[in-house]
Image 1 (cartoon, rainbow, N blue to C red):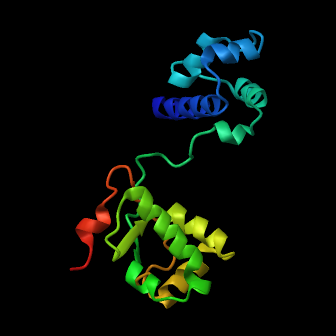
Image 2 (image 1 turned 45 degrees about the vertical axis):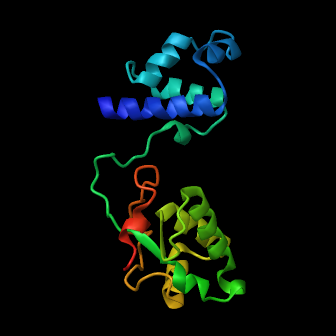
Length: 183
């Protein structure tokens, strides 16, 4: 097992344990000693390989499918598409509320979280587009086409979700729109 994969697997194990509000000692206590804190900790650090059997047993202990414990199959060093999804807020503001209301509320919430009120454009992540598609009860591609029709997205954005469009990391650059707004 590669070191990177072991670390990624360990990070998933730690995330599931933390989601359940358990410390390493809490795992040992809850399992009545079946899972030793030192062993689970070594799995989480990637210092010790975990067998498929033990991983399956740990999944049962945590009450999650084994697949939830496995890291993303795509390596983190994979080349990704850097497509930015940028909403035109001026166009959005001119649309009827009965059609664009959910999108407008979603965009407004993101602006409030970012403290970004330039009012011209707003970058969103691919995951945001997927969530919006659920709200609109359509596929991400269908929503993308609708947003292009509305003038909220630039033409040529079709297929951005299925192409693996990279997400903008709001924690790294929450004010991207301000610096890149059309002048």
